[in-house]
Image (cartoon, rainbow, N blue to C red):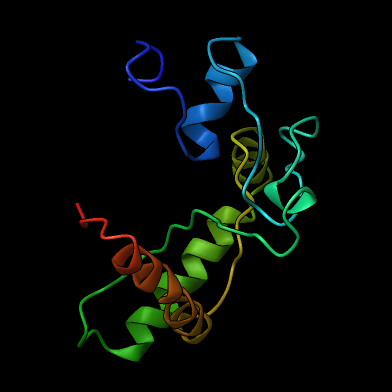
Length: 129
């Protein structure tokens, strides 16, 4: 819709927006992360104009609720190992991704801390999709 001219503004994530910005198809006006991404160092953050603003895109791997802890721990260890491989780390960096490798418990705490977005969504009457 943005490229077609139907809309004039979109909030997108780095991996999909960055290639279009680099090709000049769209103009990146701000990043919502706390710090500028090394993949787009010339694009300012929203926080540079509105101190304290931060909104990040995050991805996580989940398993069924009753998965035994040893399996969860093994899956986590393998994901961390793969993300630390130089070729994987470099590819993610070029996509504008900055992985935070953590434990399942840390992920749970982070996920709980993100509940404020649901409250904001409800405050603005936005329907989940």
